[in-house]
Amino acid sequence: MSEVRQRPVKSTEEKVPSEAPSTVKKAPPTPSRAVIPPAVIAKLLIFSFLLFSLPIATYFYTLRTIFNGNSNYSAMAAVIVANLVVFAYVVVAFIEDQGETPDAGGGALKKE
Image (tube, rainbow, N blue to C red):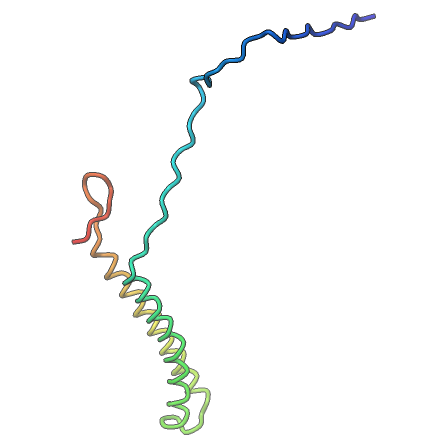
């Protein structure tokens, strides 16, 4: 048969280290929140409004004046206008992004 061994009981007089061990690493600092410029928010709101209103206005305008009640052609015109608004937003975003280049020193963006 095997023998059962008991663990030795720790003494209550053992010293508790008052300092934390040097191997404990501090948590990395939390990154700061990105600041979105007000001009970017304004462009987004303007294009959102245009994307909502222009296709609807185009549909009803072309339905009554240009296509004389043909809703298929009016719907196609509204889809074309919606795509033009999205394309214009992408072009504006690319133009805005080309104005910023990485700085040679610290990787921060620099407006030219």
